[in-house]
Image (tube, rainbow, N blue to C red; front, side, top):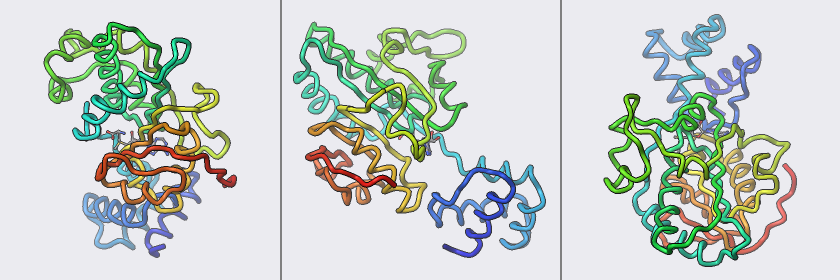
Length: 281
Ligand SMILES: C[S@@+](CC[C@H](N)C(=O)[O-])C[C@H]1O[C@@H](n2cnc3c(N)ncnc32)[C@H](O)[C@@H]1O
């Protein structure tokens, strides 16, 4: 670990803040440099001293590590595969009594799970057949989750949506474009830290067993050990023959995991091929 980063991790620990040792070293160093420039201290060691002495700056620094950026139908190719291949295939395998189970891990402000719900509603309409599905959407950020539950988006946020989907699943009111109950009733949002050592999956899902798990643009902020921890958890929570999706930038690290194989290369879409007995961390 870089010495400035080691110092930073220690300062946060000693001042009672959360453990940031899971973060990627290069990401922490870049964040340190950016904050150092903003507060105009001469160099990194002077900035580390500021961090040691100033609680407001420690909080500001920790906030600078948060990235909640997301979009509806982010990763066009992945969503196209979901729309035309993966979701219709999963729906076709459902028995009348069963339910399609999806986990959107690191869902941020909700655009990803709502995009999935739009595709599933469209499939149900096309098939003229209702089926049961449930999307469990989790994140570590309470403010992102509040926005997601509220489900009201700006004009800029909805620009990736097809006009038909926008008019079918959103209602324009004075606060913005509000997701209608037709989607909302299938998506439940809850706080879940992917590093939680005590639970294998969000408590709302009870036993995991997801047919599809999406965790995109989350791994890349963490170091390799932490990435492996999260990936094992995600793969354990996926049923055999189910799918795991990360992002283009996370494809290489995901690919190295046991129990999954890539489908639709070069996309970050993987299928679980066998159950791996992962040792407890
Ligand atoms: C950049 S956003 C990506 C959102 C969405 N998955 C996408 O690809 O558009 C990353 C999200 O991961 C969440 N996150 C980061 N670390 C997490 C953790 N340990 N457990 C759960 N969520 C986490 C952040 O709060 C943030 O909302």
